[in-house]
Structure formats: C-alpha cells, structure tokens
Amino acid sequence: MFTIILRSNMKTRGKVKLTIYLLGFAGAALFTILLVRQGVVAVGAAVAAAGWAIATIAAFHFVPILLDAIAWHVLFPKAVRPRWQSLFWMRWIGESISNLIPSAAVGGDIVRARLATITGTPMGAAAASVIVDVTLGVVTQIVFTLLGLVLLVEATGRTSLVGPTLVGAIVAIVAIAGFYIAQRLGMFRFVSVIITRLVKSPEWSSLVQSGETLDQTVRDFYVRRRGVLA
Image 1 (tube, rainbow, N blue to C red):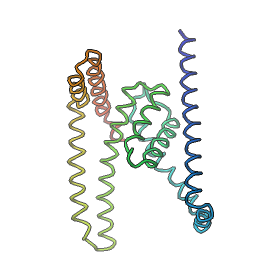
Image 2: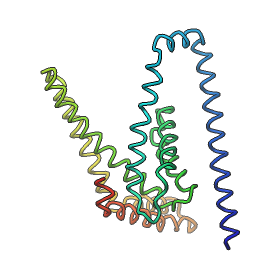
Image 3: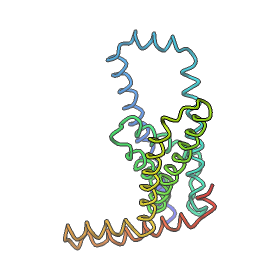
Image 4: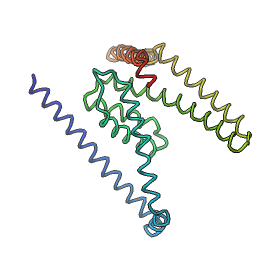
C-alpha cells in the first residue's frame, strides 16, 4: 500500500515538474516572439531609459503575491493545508495566466485550484478555497477602492469621481452579495441538477452529488471565522 502511494506521489510530482517546464518554455517562446515583433532595439532602449526602476517594480510585485498566498494559506483547514511556499508559486502561476490572457481572467483561478489538487490537496478543498478566496478578494478590493476614493478627495478636493465610483461600488457590493448568498444556498448543486436534466443521462447523476459536496465544503470554509477574517 505504501509503495502504491509513493509511486502515485512520484508520478504527481513528475507531472507538476513537466507542467512547470512546459509553461516556462512557452513563456520564454512567447517573450521572444513579442521581443522580435516589437523590435529588439526599441525594447532595449526603453529598458535602458527606465534603468533599475523596472527591476524594483518587478521585485515589489512579489509582495502582494506573497500576501495573497499567505491569505489563501490561512483559509485552508490545518488537516489539508498546503505549505505556503507551494501556494506562493501556485498563486504566481495563476496570476500570470490571468494577466497574460485578459479573456481568461478566471482561468488563473482554475489553474491554481488544479495545481493544489495535483500536489495532494483534496479536490473539494482546493476548489472551495479558491472560490472563497476570490469572493473575499473582491470584498477587499471594494474596501480599498472606497478608501482610495476618500484619500483622493481629501488630497485633491475633487469630487467629480465620487458619484461614478460609488455607483460602481454599490453594483459590485450587490453582485458579490448575490454571489455569496448563492454559495450559501448551494449554487453548485443547483447548476449540477440543471446540467443533469439537460443531458438526461444516468452517467451524469454523480455530478449532483459532487455539487452538493462542493457546496458543503464552501460552507465549511465560511464557518471557519478565523480563516475568513484573517
């Protein structure tokens, strides 16, 4: 039994390493293509003009990624909690995918949930953690937006942006509140039932059970007040 588990872990690690190598190669190839397309001389001149400021900005970006990874780490129950170092590079990869392909903004979250599953986290816990993390991230963003608006008005005295920003914030609050309520009511089971009825195949009946399990896992994450508030 131990041998089987060990072999399974080795295969999983091999898949993770292969994925990292492939993504790294694809990123390097894409960077080279963009560099040639934009002009090596022009890009070099722009980098030279900016100097070490580019490296400083790039290095500083590690700070929010690290904080996001730690916040994601706290959400997990201790029994299934991955190492924060692992979550850091998962978060890094997920954010890179979301920023690289604007049309796949949610794709990065799906990828990091998948990476967490590959490294040994139960699928339900990995998916639920990302869902809760995204929800709390939107709430935090709304708070920071309103705080920034207050500071902007205080510093400049300009109030022309107050109206549009407040309208946007209200819309975002209503949307995220609806998303949260849907999670609490069991939206994944609801979606699973609809899909099962549309497909009309007994092979898809297990999808409803999977939806119920994910709904309960999400609720369990929210019940952990300490992790959510952290």
